[in-house]
Length: 152
Image 1 (cartoon, rainbow, N blue to C red):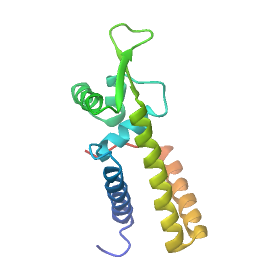
Image 2 (spheres, rainbow, N blue to C red):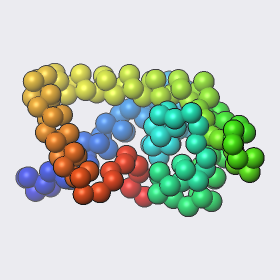
Image 3 (cartoon, helix red, strand yellow):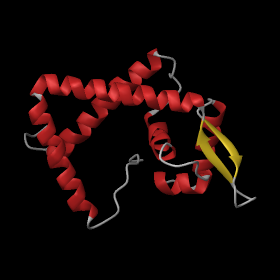
């Protein structure tokens, strides 16, 4: 990799952290969760349920693919479907206790990864990096909507 290829370094860092976290999640009983599931979990954790269409829109996938993903997550015990309060044709997808436990472990493992970075480069440098990245994201968000979703 060429020195100064910052976007690639950011992508590699993200990948390395996710790989480490998912290895640990697998060791703790969440071997059936994939990184792509995390993007769905992240979206669902910030609302009181969502339809498959809403989830698909967030993930950038078709309604059919979203329904298939939800079916898979229901089968694995991470989400459940329940009646929609205002639309009898729709169902809301929400996290189960197992889904929330997985999120809690992901958050804890993310914090451990951040602590590791702080030991490597120092807390002050890490805090500066966070502020710099936030400034870039805020600037980019003025031009377009930015969401956290997989790059399929």
